[in-house]
Amino acid sequence: MIPKNGLSTVLIDGAEKYIVTNGGTILTNTSVKNIIVQYSTIQSVELDAGVIIKPKTVISAVPYFDIPKMFENPKNIGLNNLDAFVSSPIISIHLWFDVHFMQEQFVALIDSPIHWVFNKSKIYGKANERLMYLALVISGAHDHIEMDKEQLVHMAHKELQRFYPTASVAAIIHSLIIKEKRATFSPMVGIEQYRPAHTTSVKNLFLAGDWTDTKLPATIEGAIQSGFACSELVK
Image 1: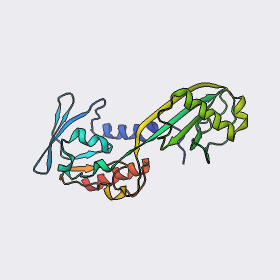
Image 2: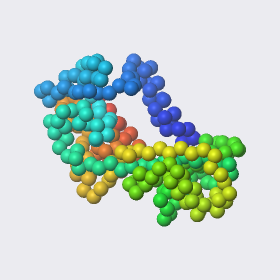
Image 3: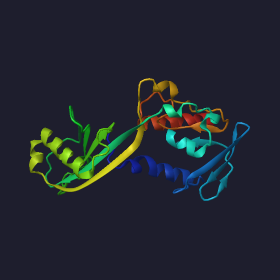
């Protein structure tokens, strides 16, 4: 299933509206400076602006590497194996061409450093526009994360020409590179035993995120499933 709109529109906008409509508050551009735990219960959450929140329940949805920024000693809340996790990078290469040489909505490339190609022009119903917009994805991009923009764009264009010969006459009008060095956790052999449960040794603290014990790989589906699991536990 490929959404016809960006993931922010599909997953975020509706959730924000629901929270606000039901009396909730969303704080953006705000970091958690410290979380005070006493008697196995979170007593207060200190924000970077000095605001103190006294929560009934806390659901942490941050990645594993941000946990130590909120808790002075994660082992005190039952997280003893955070150092077992390793991050995996993802690179997105966005290209706009003056020729529409790809007809599919998306393809997977075999024996190529480029893993996926998404034809955003087709997906968004804009195939009649002058420029063709492609989004290329490299997962587990350890070997390419240090390449500069020019190198990545050149490699991407060269790979597209292997699979679509017509791409050789297509000029790149615009390009955008997005590097996420810590995009997901790396599903290494043995990591399953260290993925934490949604409950913790702190009574009112629950963990969500793709890195928790969802029985799924590092995916949006896993992250969403963890959120549902936490909501049931809070009930």
